[in-house]
Length: 174
Image 1 (cartoon, helix red, strand yellow):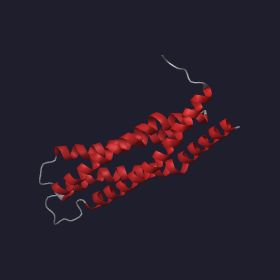
Image 2 (cartoon, helix red, strand yellow):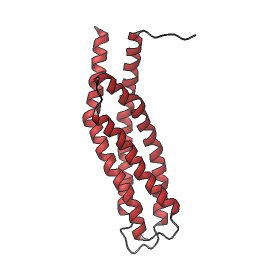
Image 3 (tube, helix red, strand yellow):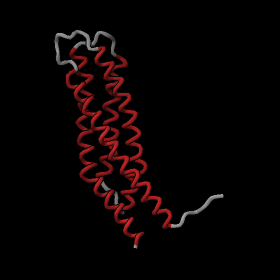
Image 4 (tube, helix red, strand yellow):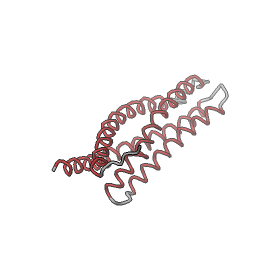
């Protein structure tokens, strides 16, 4: 038997989901940013030492870490795209261009990382410095987009979501 929630129950549920989600989002941002910095550090040095004749081992290690990172990033992006962004749009009552940009950035980061993985799939050892730099450049681009993306979310989206939460809580405590 289906039970229909009252409007107040729906809002309380929304507040709970958003509150829990914001806590999770902050935690994930910290974790993802730390991992992103580690990946950036690894990608930045790839191909830089011309004396290294084969970068296959370094790139394979990086590939494994990228796959793990992408799993976390994809889950994070999915929650934002399917839960957080629609809630913020509904709350604001308008289509926020910034949310569209953030959604596009999710796709762009994914695309850069997939480009790296595709280059690695087709690469045969030994991988010279030039090829290694080309592959790593995809990750450096992903880092640039993602660093700006996190900054925009933390400076603009987080405060809006927090305000939304406070407004909803105040409305229902009166």
